[in-house]
Image (cartoon, rainbow, N blue to C red; front, side, top):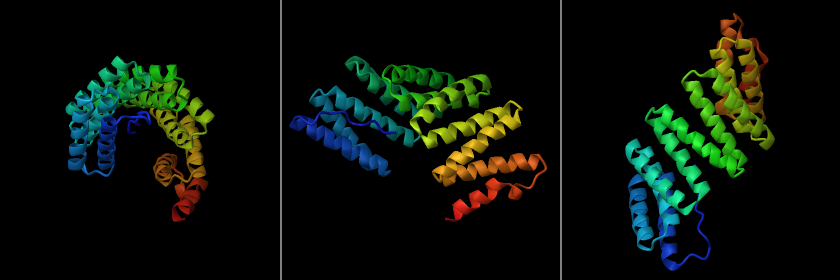
Length: 250
């Protein structure tokens, strides 16, 4: 998720030029035109520092961090996200700080540093909770839960995912709901409780059907197929199999 501009509509002409360069760089980045993105963002950064506009500079640094992540240069991405974090803290911009912490956490995941990634994501969780941003809070809880899943800490996984599920249900966020139900099921499989795991994966399957998420349905189909094969059953005889095939043929 890209950091959105929070600039006021009454920006001065120099501000407008910096903002235009930032938008061009962001568009080039989203289109995977990395040389153009580098050029526009570098120009935007110079302009923002010339006019002393830290709110614009922080947004540029975030986008440059994404650029380095896409280039698989996690160290430079970390440097840019940390610079943005320092600016947001200096401006006392809690939302910007939370986003910078989230970006840093993702970069540390790319570096396989789960301990640092989790610490940073928990810091962002605290800020999103303080700001009463339900969607961002749920996403943070889910991310932390999945981190615990990767390091086989199942009780913590279930605790964070359950909290995320409650918020996703309130928001009627079907995608968030389906993904976390799936991970709940996988966690119970990991804990050698397949019947409980099957219950959650089946619910995830049903939610995915409601909004016709074909990618998620295929992944869940494979999980359910594996379960029924282990149980000595023919997956093609199960109702979920035919329902999935019909949806995928549409």
